[in-house]
Image (cartoon, rainbow, N blue to C red; front, side, top):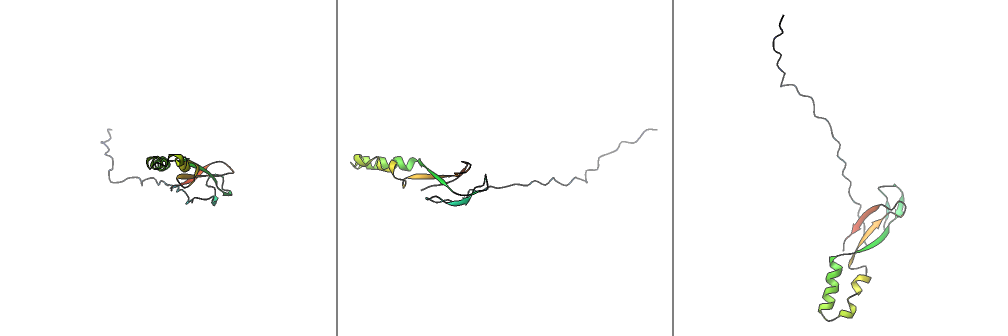
Length: 101
């Protein structure tokens, strides 16, 4: 006996697999050390700050030079007001967030 050709039923489909998407947001941090729960080690810590020189820092120094205040051109590099504050966990060292000025 010969079996007739079996056609695939195109009307039945498997339900799509469920995927979970996790969106990790950076916590709000400010210009000062912040008490926060570290997303990596889950410890409650006061963040450690490292200041980063940015384009704004260079622009402030350039403007001081441009207006004949060149002896004061180093001030933006010593001041925290013209630099971004990077927050780190003092416990595990992981990066937590940046406060941009």
